[in-house]
Length: 423
Ligand SMILES: Cc1cc2nc3c(=O)[nH]c(=O)nc-3n(C[C@H](O)[C@H](O)[C@H](O)COP(=O)(O)OP(=O)(O)OC[C@H]3O[C@@H](n4cnc5c(N)ncnc54)[C@H](O)[C@@H]3O)c2cc1C
Image 1 (tube, rainbow, N blue to C red):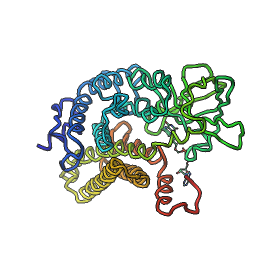
Image 2: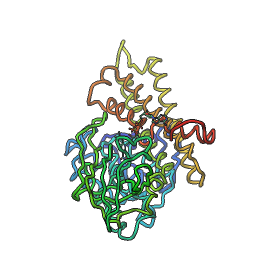
Image 3: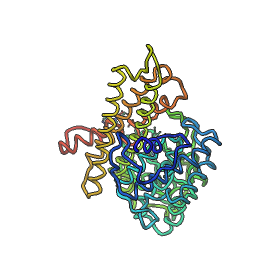
Image 4: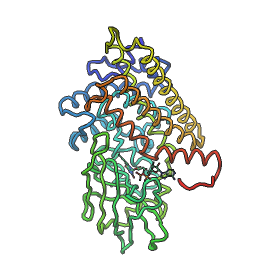
């Protein structure tokens, strides 16, 4: 039975029967599951968590895609996810991670987002949990591990990643935040922009220039306590997806112990970008998972909506639109999976990860647009899930490296150092 497996994996019906590892299948057309048996087991257990406890919490607290939960509610989710062994599963094994392959990681994450749960991003702590610090563990001192990384891995504290500034977006090397050494502290001044998770984070991994000269930047990474004096988080704006999980971090003569410097001075950008290829790939399962929800919603709506005396799914125009959506989704998914396999095999995959990020984000948005069209007027009413998905999937074309920046990278890999500006 395949339909039931898909129903329990991709339904947000809280009465869905428990998913078992052997019933986990690829999302479209019930193909064989591409990951390991262990990943299938984890997907099944996480599905039960999402459709059981978390669905109950969503109902109790009136959480939806537009209304982010408050911090105490988020902490409940993080702690419970940690107790169940999900929260830190993608960390290095030395820190309690499960040593999953990248392929398993993307498939698990895809299934979480494809659940359609508004709490999907919080199962792993995407905005302010282990994914934000895991890669830094190798560079952290024992003090930094104990004070900043372990509490995040154990769901006791939240952390954000602060690189972007008003004048340094696609070009992060242009950042202007300064860190001046004064005895055994650095004094930080500047303003970080668009920092995910900062409104509820306790700490930030923050990039600032430690160079004395304004003409020469030496970008260094610091752990910054967001509760200390000289720091303010300003979170008055909403993204087009309606969420307020992003904020600015203002640093005004903020004194940070020199012991909070991560790695060598001047190595900050290298640390920040060190896992960028993997991180690019790791955004794809969110887009693919959400696009799966959009396709499923459009298919279900087309089956039940009647016009001209028949379900609109009977019209060839609607059928072709659904077929195009499914084809784009399958292609995006295939690129995501092949890139994960390549990275697991030790390949470079720089261009592939950019292609995956580019193609998944652009395809997912086209799928969401077609899903809105199939819903007709209902699709453009605020509060409908498909309308939210359209706005959410629009954002991924900008976030974590715009589509243009991905094309620059792919072209550079193709051409070598091309005679053009840009990252
Ligand atoms: C909701 C949200 C969450 C975010 N979370 C974080 C976070 O947690 N931490 C963090 O550090 N940052 C975060 N960001 C910042 C995000 O990474 C940047 O917004 C993104 O990299 C683009 O930078 P920008 O907005 O300054 O756009 P710009 O760089 O100003 O780009 C504007 C336009 O110019 C194009 N462009 C720029 N340079 C080139 C070029 N060389 N060639 C061709 N086209 C080019 C871009 O593609 C884009 O279309 C977040 C942003 C948002 C909106």
